[in-house]
Length: 297
Figure 1 (cartoon, rainbow, N blue to C red):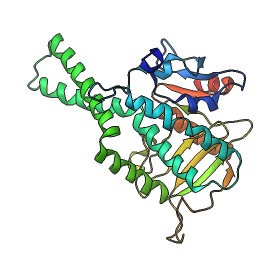
Figure 2: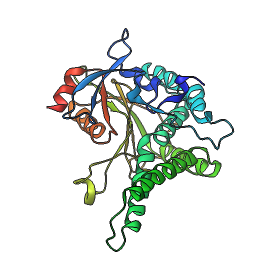
Figure 3: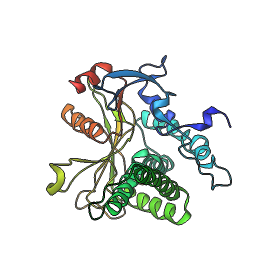
Figure 4: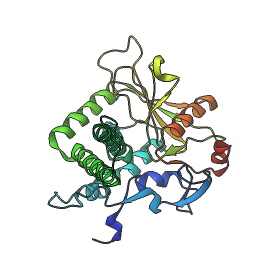
């Protein structure tokens, strides 16, 4: 295997492509919030190492350690171009494409480093709390061992959720049932203000008023009856998924309903872009440098 397989996109290149600065340039603008002493807007190539991680989806317990990466790059990522091309037509979205969208949302969230980071943080907290029980300080070698154990177990859990037949079926079924039982709408941005995205695309607003003030947006999709979801498809289009209104016939679902295209107000675009900002892992991404610079200010 060459370096290309070792350095694996955690943000799919086929997705980043739709935030290119121009058709002639394979670059996007992004704010790197890990940059010190302060974040700035910079240009990054679609194949830049910041959107990749070394052997991130490899598992040496697989017969073929690169199996997951090959599945993503050969069978899943190329479908995004077909999805966006059909949406650009602003016509009837076929049931096949709607199913592809659901699968894209599922794999995008499941493969994202935010998933693994959450596992690692929880495991590290539990292991550290146990080791420090009674107020005993940790030795340097103990802390190093906990750090490595947390990383290894988090990776095992993350990849396991992707490849374990039962886990994958349960989660994908939940995605399909939840997404298809809601109302879909394609929002269109304004020429003066496009949609942003990030390195963890897709989020849900916190609809629970008790917690919404402290945490207004979730990094994950809320897969429940009240949940609302947003997924920026491109600077021009954003998928909105929300509960059906009262009185909608039971036989109507996202796979059969008419999906409208709606011009979003500047206020609504700003609300969605704030969700993108808050639910990033490290980067906020756009094709418009000036707007991102105003975001920093």
